[in-house]
Amino acid sequence: MEVFLVVKKSTDLTSAGVPWSDVPDFVLPHVEWIDNRSGPAEQALPPLDQEPIPPVLYTLSRLHEDRPRGSKPMLDVHGAKSRLENCRPGAWLISPFTGWKWAKWPDGQLRVDAL
Image 1 (cartoon, rainbow, N blue to C red):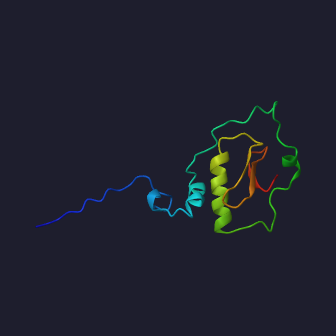
Image 2: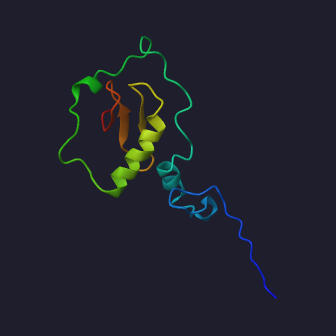
């Protein structure tokens, strides 16, 4: 007698292929940030004539040579890019993953600790 085990595969997986239900609670906020679980920003900023781009975004340098590198910064920028993807220049956020401040600059680039 042959017995077949049917395994129901979840299509709701993390980017690492782990079912969301198996992600431990203590890392869930970080995994949600990395995988952009909440999606891009839902509310649009006011038009540029009502809320101009902060002047500081025009004055800061592009990248610092000693900027953080490695997996944590790469994961953080991935989450920030996902959230600011459909936003206009001048939009910013504070990462719940690292606490870094990300901003979308006038040229469309995403930069850290601009604010």
